Length: 233
Image (cartoon, rainbow, N blue to C red):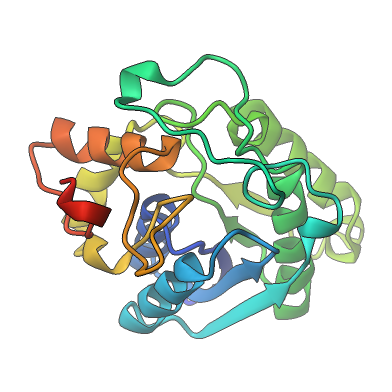
């Protein structure tokens, strides 16, 4: 147990929950940070609360930022969430579910909180294999943000600590992420990944996020424990 404070971005989804488990396993005192950012639904925040409670974080903060003021994404604007029959149909470009600068905004909030906690470690669940093509999930982006964090903060300038942005899932596909989480005792039944859940809170099974999640469980040889609308899976 290293006993150091860390800020972990927790959306309630599969990836961030796995990262939380990794931070706990490495002995960090976890301060979980989630966002009410004007997203289409609150189901993921309910999942974030469940995950934070079940995994015994030291503190869980839900910060309010209303990105609906800018729109420009199917998650924050009146734009339909794309649906597909299979993960093979997912395109190569950046999809309309990309929220402009979202990870930069989230990491900036995490950085501000880390400074107040005298923490130098921030964890985020991005990966560059089974993902939706978002530009702020790439290794170059994480490295650039880490450089900026050490230039733009009192702690960085005074040399009292050096910030590290941990992205432990970066080189894993979804199946690998799931296997790692299960090794650490993650209950994926607590999580939620769907962009466009049913009114009952069940996953749609056809948005990009659902399809990548289902692909991961299939490749891991496991059944996804969450419920999908209409008994689809």
